[in-house]
Amino acid sequence: MLADVTPLMRVSAAFTRFVTISMHLSSFSFRRAEQLTRVFSLFILLVGFACAIGVLPSALGAEGTGTLFLMSAATGAAAPARQPAASAIQVDGQLIEPAWSQAETQTAFLYPWSKHTAPATEFLAIADAERLYFAFEVGDRDIVVVKNFAGESTVDQEDRVEIFFAHDAALSRYFCLEIDPLGRVHDYAASYHRKFDSGWNCSGLRAAGRIRPGGYTVEAAIPLQTLTDLTGRPVSQGSILRVGFFRAEFRQGALGDADDNWLSCVRPNTPKPDFHVPSAFTDWRVPRGARAAAGTFRTRGVVLVPEDLPSADWPARAARAGLTTIALHHGTSTGRVTEFIDSAPGREFLEACARLGLQVEYELHAMRDLLPRALFAEQPELFRMNEQGHRTPDANLCVHSQQALEIVATNALRLGRQLPPTTSRYFLWGDDGLPWCRCPRCRGFSDSDQALILENRLVRELRALDPGAQLAHLAYANTLPAPTQVKPAPGIFLEFAPIHRRYDVPYAQQTGAEAKDALASLTENLQVFPAETAQVLEYWLDVSRFSQWKRPAVELPWSKSVLTADAETYAGLGIHHVTTFAVWIDADYLRGFGEPAAVQEYADALRRCQ
Ligand SMILES: [Zn+2]
Image (tube, rainbow, N blue to C red):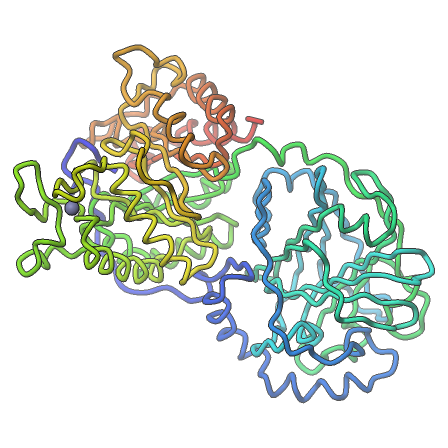
């Protein structure tokens, strides 16, 4: 993002091609159908469909063997989709929100019916006034999932975690949630002994799963009102529930009929594996707290260009600091970023981020690539008109050309597939600080409105590819003023980048007539866009900006007090997503100036801000 200088200064070197599917796909939410499809292709090698089918009959006939194979037959319905969480915790299979650091944990999982050493299993839980959030971190080197999901009972053939809630200690009625490594749920009601009602669905349940190196994570949220309804008494933070925590640990050749297929937190008083008995349950208190779930910065990121990455070990630095996200950026060329991601160093970068639990996003000035300039010779009407009334391919497009919108949408989908953000948050910006169209139909719309016309179209298309997709509306330079005529479609979020502000004075104090990119622009934009999803893109760590985009780089003029004040300002406006350019904190910079304390101090300031 360069408003003032030649864009080629940020051009990266070219690299070779590709990326393993597995790291691309290390993050799953259940609704991301395309990702699931691709992930299944990985695990078909572990669990062929024929294998699953072959095992099922014997399991069904195994008296007393783990519960779940004795469930009724598959309903045939597709597994229910779980909506993304609207609260501070996003149920996405990644426990990255600060609230999770306050979770209560249980790690005492054992094999009640086997002498083998049980694999690592951790149960985590937190609650707020509305929901119980729980998660399982599961160590598992041979994850068993079924490729052809044929209704919720398919989960019975897979590795999974389980939580049961009892209405009463004698189990006259109890409720079971079983969730596989992809976040797919089999929920059913039951009564002692083993009378199952698979038609029951858990109201308001959200679940997601994420397969990662060495195991998988399941994350879920259940409304406290649902637990109140199930248990017949008010459930809130601190309430005591009667619950069971279990895990099915399958492997090739042992899909439920081995004694070491079943883990629990307690030893049920049964000779053979069976969780459907009163002695498999225990009293458990709904955690209090999770104050940090509200008001904190869920995204704490840095934005880099590909050439910053070699030899600078950014994933490790970001993870050490407690950052959540690294975004890759280029000022003029989406191709530079796709080339990097398709290269061996790009693959290593994605693998490192996945290993360290970092989100990866792509923030790109993309229009000149999404509407190829070569089309101008044949179809100038696709392009913008300048103030002199001439069509020109110098930047952006005519947003009242349906054909231009169509071409841009098609290419945006292609780019989204090449560079899938792990957060489903897409950033396909207009050309860097450059004007939009002045044709008779566009002229009445500001640059901000024109950008939003296009973004509204693109987010609809992206949601066909990725149902949870969100798309940034970049408020920056010529699009800094809030749109006045166009309203954002669902999925559009504000990204606010005050490139012209000062960094030696807290932002909130920059209010005079001379103030550039003043905070008022943000508050005006927040009248149009929801604060809940809005993101601030700052320049606190942007060595390239402080160097006036000219080498050699200067040392970062860092002010911790300004950053701390700014973070409080943004938190006070309800902002939950903050990133900063950290461009040119690269291998050269580290050699010249050493490790910048600013990175850690930036991360700390955001984390402490409530
Ligand atoms: Zn136009």
